[in-house]
Length: 188
Image (cartoon, rainbow, N blue to C red; front, side):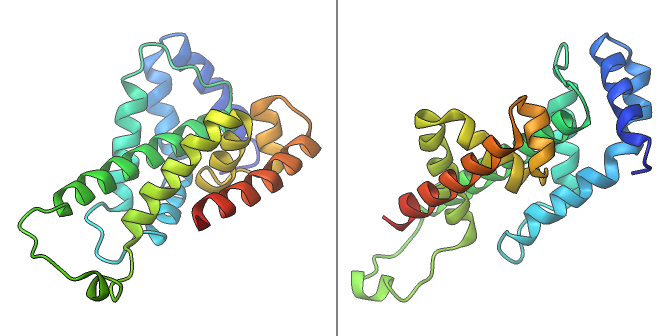
């Protein structure tokens, strides 16, 4: 993105929010590379041979954002954060569907000792992480949002502070606390 692009993106988002569909047409090429980078980052963390491709993930996120009656994007950082949230939702939904098909669908009984030989797949890890983030959000909503923006949205601490309208040191503290909580929660 060009140095002046974040301001232009923010202006186009404001126009789109006011109902200008032409602004959306100008916005798409400006942010597409950033969204593809985000999607590629997500997909690197997925299992090999995943049926979703980064392009499909970006397209699905765009479709969900475009369906909003009045988009509520406050700027480029907020837009990226919302995009990341949609991408995470899409991947979790995909993983849940995949895992639902595994639960007894034509499976053979396996002894517990034999089952320990199999490592959990990444889709299961994503579902577990999503469940953990939901629990964290129930307890500390801001901390869960900070994790989502940082790791799923790829935003810097400064950008997160801007989006959430809090001090940068608060973001640093929330990030550290949430990381410890998630590590402990996922270890149990």
